[in-house]
Amino acid sequence: MKNFREKMKRRIVFQVLTIIIVAAVYFILLYNKDKIAGENYIVSFVRGFQTGLFVSLQAVSIYYLFKYISALKNEETLKEIYIKENDERKIMIEQKAGSVSMIISYIILALASIIAGFYNQIIFFTLVGTLLFLAFTRLFMYLYFNRRY
Image (cartoon, rainbow, N blue to C red; front, side):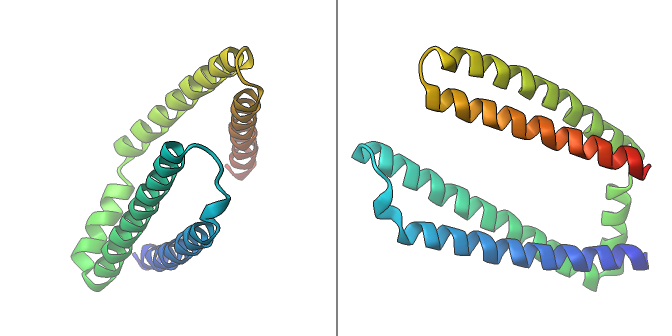
């Protein structure tokens, strides 16, 4: 349980850093908001989406921050979180769901790239870049875990 307690402390630090970094990036970009070009309704939509995403990221980070802090103060809560995180059935379900969803994402991104190539080059290259990023990330993680285990 001592190792898990240290893991929770690292998670608290990570959540604090996430809150600070997301806020800093958002406010820096908000300061440069006049550089977004486009129609007024599209610019308004983009700013609204960014604000909603910012608030959501901050809310989730703050929720987990308080969850981890309270778990460190209460041994029973810490034990419950440890049991939930180390449940073999849950771990297997998450691994299977993640694997299948990534395959589906690859297929959808590849099809969307093909279709977008007929209409808009910027969208095409964005989708292909996203597809390559995900593929290389998966490859590197596969190689890393293959050597680690």
